[in-house]
Length: 71
Image (cartoon, rainbow, N blue to C red; front, side):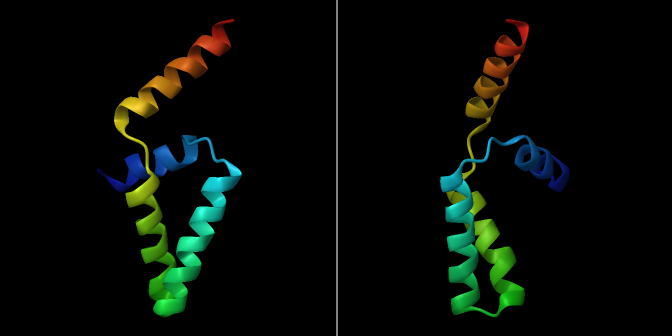
């Protein structure tokens, strides 16, 4: 996966409050056990690795959005 694809997925993702809480939790834990310089990227990578949706889920979500727009 290229960085541009990852950036587009993150920008188009529907962010819930729980997603933001988990992201901040992983960053906090990364900064606690590592330095903040390494903790922020590693916490973000851990969040993406554990919570990033599969391609099929993203495609289904886009189809739902398109159907709602057409209505």
